[in-house]
Amino acid sequence: MYAVHVTVKVQNKLAKNSIILSLKEWSAYLFDKNGLIFRCFVDRAENQVEIFHVWESKELVEKTRIENSNEFWEQIREMGGQISKFEGPCQVEMSKEFSNFGINFK
Image 1 (cartoon, helix red, strand yellow):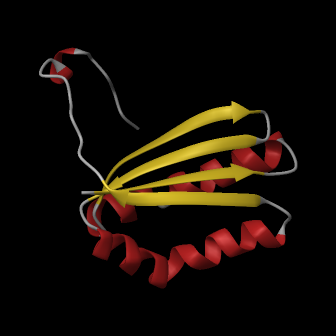
Image 2 (image 1 turned 30 degrees about the vertical axis):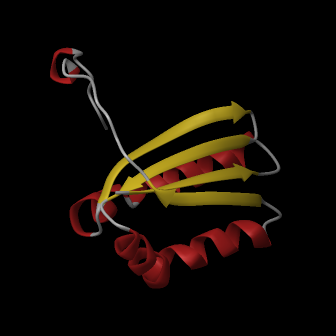
Image 3 (image 1 turned 90 degrees about the vertical axis):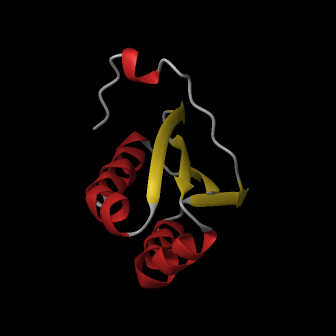
């Protein structure tokens, strides 16, 4: 598995919410056809969000970047947004009781 962590800081809450909504619009495409396993949005501040992704492989991350995500992140930079990323191979653990938590993912 491969993890990508992205920090996005923009001018205001509206811009942050717009970015989150745009990423959520890609969800079905990324989950169904491009190897995304998990994505988590963490509100850091009114104008800043942390986004954590877990993918099946680095190759699927690179394929998605080439096809469409590089342009998305560049548009955020053009609007004055600040983006930082780090990534690498990862190991994921889950609770044995996960199915009993009653968590509903969107």
